[in-house]
Length: 378
Image (cartoon, rainbow, N blue to C red; front, top):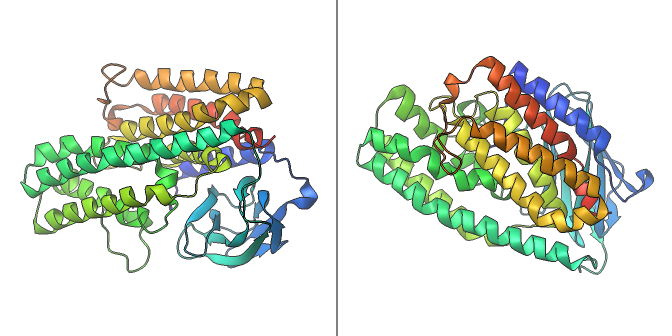
């Protein structure tokens, strides 16, 4: 879910992660070849409007007063690559792989709306540059993983919706968190379509002006805070299934590259830092740790698929990532009944000291994970 309004804790976390990324993210492109992107509250300036096909590097600086999001998008708004939550006064280096064609670089101050955009033309033959076959295998594996997760999510969402339509409050509460796991594991792919996430996974404070609140969190509020299921909730439950079925059908069209997998893994950790650790994501149900685990599993899957190439290019990085994934997963295990279940402790029972421990472990993983895209293109 695209975080829009950050609490002080989330803002500090984001700034820390962004600062680490700005120092550690690298590219095979020289600084002179990178596109300098200067984002502000009402402008988005880019140093180049044309680049050759292959790996493109964006050197992003946010000179505005609000957190911003920078994306490389197709004309139909599908996202090639993105970085959310770039705090005021911070920098970030984004590496992406692009084929010949027409694109836009979008800056979204406050992470809302269409954003300020600049045209980007990518020249070349339109073919993907020759690369290690293991990377093609990784992309194929991740595409299948994303499709599998979508295929599994729809029946779980249908079960959730059926409980709501039956007016069964307890059954609906029980079905809520499991219905979200596949989405949370592959959230960057889901978000890449642009129009699905706002309908399914937006919190009340993330709504655009005039946008009707729909999706999981609207229903979460009805179940836990309002403790009621009315005609509107039953309609919204059916709409959630329809929207998720749309997502399932479109997953196969997602633009997936080795760098988008690597950047997506980092985005999933940022999702944890700005929503799950703070308790903002599932603020009514307090099932944040289920989403937390889903994000970590999705990030780890992308890493594991890329690992054969990364291990050759940067063996020290794989050693550190293995260590930090193991540590974070071990810490999460403390909060569930057993290692195979998703029966996690209600997040409102997790103390501030425990939340800090989780936050620190996420930070420890985010730092080496920010180097993954650079290791892929070495």
